[in-house]
Length: 165
Image 1 (cartoon, rainbow, N blue to C red):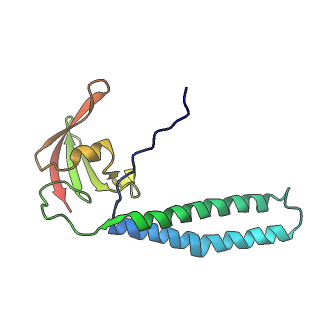
Image 2: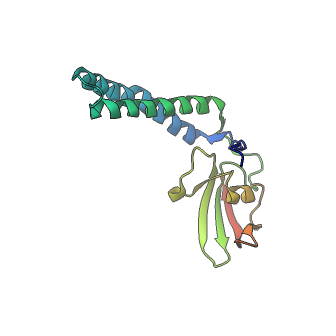
Image 3: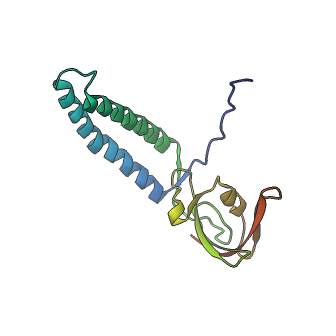
């Protein structure tokens, strides 16, 4: 058995203007507020003496590594994403950033917004364009039916009721 792991398909490089603001705010908070506080607490814990048994020092250093890892990720991600701030010319079709209202075969209505992988918030109905539902919705129009799933797992049929940007 091989240990080779095939590379994962990169997610969409798109982000909404609001999503960019959230990532920038998180980066600012981590770099300008949280990291200096943790650094200060680590230096105070280091001044107390024996570092090998000092829990504040050990966990502070661990938290610093977590912050640095996230800062590196956010910095790199903000450099590579493409901000989509304008709605598409053809607003009758579903594209990135669209708010979509769907009706399933039981008559239940659900609302979604197609966003990038960095902005997913299931409670708000923000789904990724890379998700099965997101991929199925792309390019569809009001009145179109979409089928999600497979025959083995089960299929769900949705009707597109409304598209807004």
